[in-house]
Length: 283
Image (cartoon, rainbow, N blue to C red; front, side, top):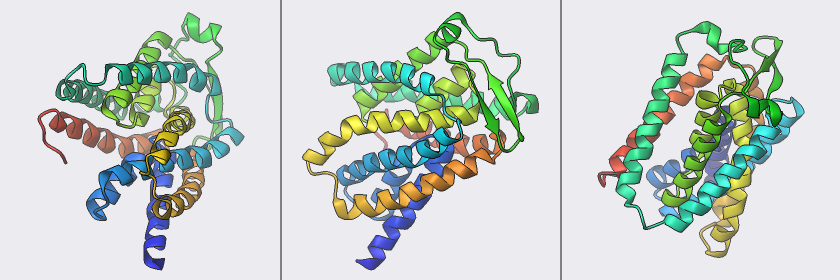
């Protein structure tokens, strides 16, 4: 019992730290660990993953809010799209063959991975993005922001662009979540970093906040259908909160290039996994 408790705490600490750094919530890290390494039934692993996402969001958001790293206006605006997409996805569930959806979404993720790889090359693009011009909607909705980069030791102001494209991407993220039951943290970071041209750090921080809002809405369903096991979820959540707090501090001292180097393999894994699922192969 004590060994299992300690193991859950360690897994939670790892997932919370990585989830806060990358803006992916930690659920997509915990689920394969619980199922593949520990042999837990997938339905209970998914339930635990939902709690992990909420705990990661709670632990990281407090630190990011204090340091003014996340963009609240962008988060609330894009959350509208995610919610609409999730509702539409739930309504369309079973109408469109899931194999086709997995392949289409995988191609989107793999394309975004390639764009992130290209961003590794130009060093100048990792800083303030001075050439990015705000569009009309971003100015009207006051989505532009600034933050203090602890790795560069200076304030960075950034302009948000292609707001409609980011909104559309979040609709896609919601659809993916509603239709396929997958986490949308990676899609959120893609929408802000690749499409809206926000710097990676506020993109990751803002994604952490958004995922907690999304996961909280579905946690009630998992709780009442009995797929959240307290003996697993509670120690995981404790470890995740500490890990997320630690991860939010570490992230602010990392160069964006380092974050991308960690994030790209995860995106590639997610893309390949979804592509193979489209052909009935599970990894």
